[in-house]
Image 1 (cartoon, rainbow, N blue to C red):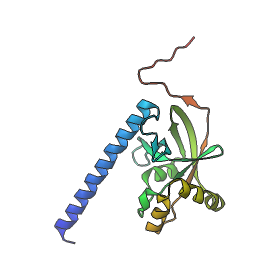
Image 2: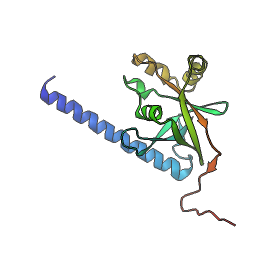
Image 3: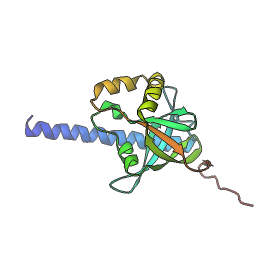
Image 4: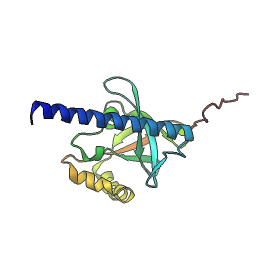
Length: 169
């Protein structure tokens, strides 16, 4: 590829990343504003908001993600669309496993860990049944796509509506 071709590829990649970032911010905004009534599902599949601590910046980062409930744990797939690298939210959790999730109007503190091989064998078919594209993503990459388990670490706190103030007696 020529120097110009490389620059064009980087520019297209940069535009794509900015567009994705914009749409993620809009989805997070709408989810929070509506308590998940808007942007709370994708093709009928439930979405949660995961907020991690950026491993390089220390800045909180929020990502809307498909999840599966498994007993008292939330199950995520670090597919990154089948790209060769793990998504940044998973790399952030690997460094700092404590995070926050929002499901509808409920905020929860969680601790993340990767599923064991036994857990993976049990959960992967359920995850593919929930969202068949995961199988396509696994075929697209040489890495083993991590399955991430989130376990609550505190009590559940409801999120109020925007502009709502709490009344204390």
